[in-house]
Length: 355
Ligand SMILES: [Mg+2]
Image (cartoon, rainbow, N blue to C red; front, side, top):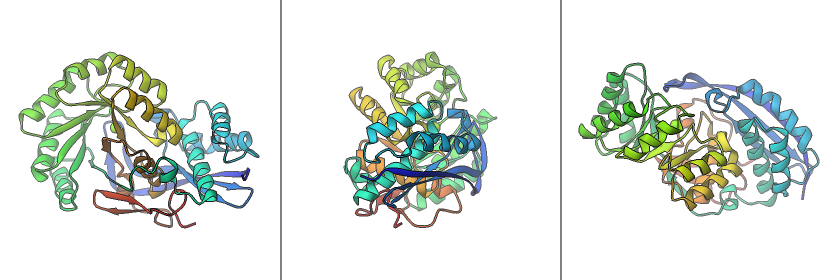
């Protein structure tokens, strides 16, 4: 099989359609890195990194600087020997999970393109279609309600609301406005580490008492507050999903062993595609709920997450919406979408792009 010849990175800045705010950051543009790989037979592959410094410690500059290190470590290795190059990649970049994820994505794209195999088939081919939620950012209740009504019109049946903003009353008002505007939607809450355990429990209970169909709460407490996370999980009336707390398989194993959460939110930008598969295995063995989320990827990075979601076919909750919040996409359409429905281009090799 073809050897790896060339690996390059390019920083890209893509405006968001409107500012996107969570408890941890306010984004007006996606600052990503696009990675290209070329194999000795000429096959090319693409990957995308969407670094979130508050999650992995990497920014765009760190990812751009890391890719040549990976290139030097991987040059000449056989693209088909995934177990060999992925080990070399982990050794070359032990503290750059998001950079690794983009290199891995590009290599798996190139490899499966060289084979003529779609990536979603490589990952198991469990299904061809999934449905995602849509995220409502920290915004005024009025705007949040309008966004929710528009999403309901498009057919979204699950909405994820960012909470943990500067004003707790406004958090509640935002949730109520979304629930009123989309009365049939199930509501997912994401606090992005903003609460302590009593605050999180009080927030969920108040929402439920006001008739809001809360389905889950994601990352209620700071990432390193394992005690607090476990305390919320023990008493929460809805499943608690760990996101920032779980950036790799070891953390997922700790959740499984301690019962600190009911489930984990996997992201390609945290664990990479191969690391995500390891977390899937741990979570399924431990009967943890599985969520697949995203950072601020365009359709390029999202196509990898969709391949994983369809290939593995085992996610309870999907939050693959960032590309719909970003104005400009890379050339080519790697998958299909109609509102909440996402489906793969069934026979397109690799990530699904034509070239
Ligand atoms: Mg989250």
